Length: 583
Image (tube, rainbow, N blue to C red):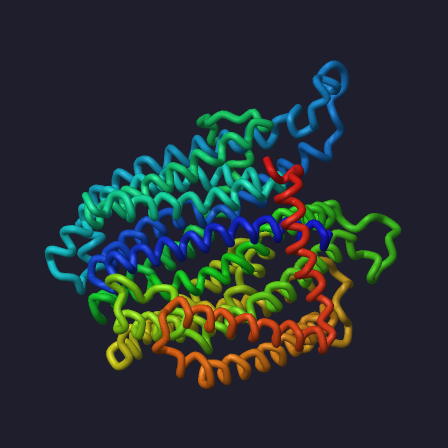
């Protein structure tokens, strides 16, 4: 099972790397054309609106409901007995090509998604003036008018991305990771093309046209690889898969409504702190999302189908009742619960191991990184200062968000969507309190700091709750001599997480000290050199810092270092040699 998770994670990681790198190129292009200006902030509002609506309608259901439910249908297709007679040997087809249970679930879900998405897009087009009046309250009237027109132009992308997400969930349920991972990069390709080819003619509208093209490309890239699943869109609200998806997603949708409210408030407050604040926050968010997409998102998506199948077996075992004659105690524990725990703890250790050095690099070198990546064209030294400040306040949340994404996937695999939602509502309230208390005094950094507090608290609370849930899944398996916080500590210690945190913390501290010394001794004195030369020095400093981190882990005996190295080798072999995941 660890090999399956590592192989899947390596494939998603490579795809996410391509997508995130293109996302960085996208924002570099926008920064060079518009800098941290009001026009760039307007595009930030448009992106937030489309992303917020997409997450609320479909995106939030991807991990919460679509992948867990589709995974069960895919599991039934590939594990139930093959049909007898001619159908059993027809062309040597695989069982999942013969029975089409996943195809029926996929078709019903696509049909329902389109029936919801298309009318909602129409309503949003009508409500565009009210959306911009609230979220862009700090902008000048002419900028609000421009934003309103572009919001209307951008809204059809929500329907295209929604359809792409449903198809993507089917790929993940079948444990096919290459195509959906790389298809997300096409969204950024469209925006980059729009920026380079269309903005000379349409100005900011060229970016929105590129956004539409990217959404269409992402949707089109998903369908060809589902040839083995004979699906077609249909309206069937009675399909059991659709009912289960709605039941699982309903709590998540409620939480996303709260999240959308927080995002709207954040955008409104940011528009009042300066014309370039939203743009600076967007650029800094891109830099934060790069390591998160490379590590946390890859691991959570790769782990979710595996955890879903393990958790489904545990739930079925519990529903069947304790077998007669089975002795009490540890023998009551189903094998899949141990596998679930092992998969989860491995993923958490890998997430910490990989995200820590990236966090240190962004914290210590936030100013040089922003200067190297963005300072050109309309992006001036002042733009660098405000973006680097936002990055400094965003970066501390990285380890907590990495853990949080894995824990959310673990809850969703248990088909428990209520707990992450309730925690999200609580931490959203925490954001509002911190942001409103500090924004008048701190300005834009207060909003970034509030976001970091919100996301970090979400990860910490989920960690405590998940171990209590897992420990209580099967009676008789809890450690009898520990209750409450003591039980959590024993679970963390037994999983090897406490040792992993200690080793990673020591290695990260060594890396931070090294980077600080290099910044003061080399990078700062060399700031006047040509950018290519100075950039090579910055990259060299990062390589030295990473080497110190890896060396410290090796000396401390971190077992997971070899696992991370194996991920890279498996990704290269799978992508260069082909295999079942290439479809």
